Image (cartoon, rainbow, N blue to C red):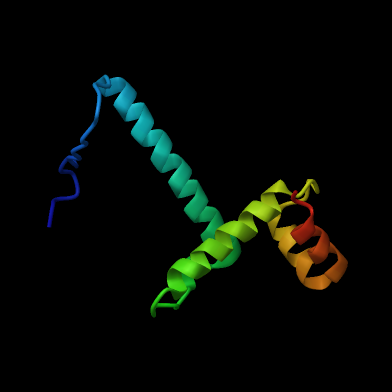
Length: 103
């Protein structure tokens, strides 16, 4: 493998010129968003612990987790995602409100 202190080289194929500074900003922004999304999905939905491996199950479950996260984030209640998940498990009326609030 590569020594721990060796630089990492990435190659990007672009359709137009972007300055190195701008490219660095774009790539870091992209990965910050990706890492934040993954963290939220893992913390609230235990995505890393998911053992679905066959056929389309992993992709289907990932879609459902992202859909659930979007519903939780867009619900007007200002409580945390964790509290909304717990409340939806305890309160059928809140679960129905959560599922039906989007237009």
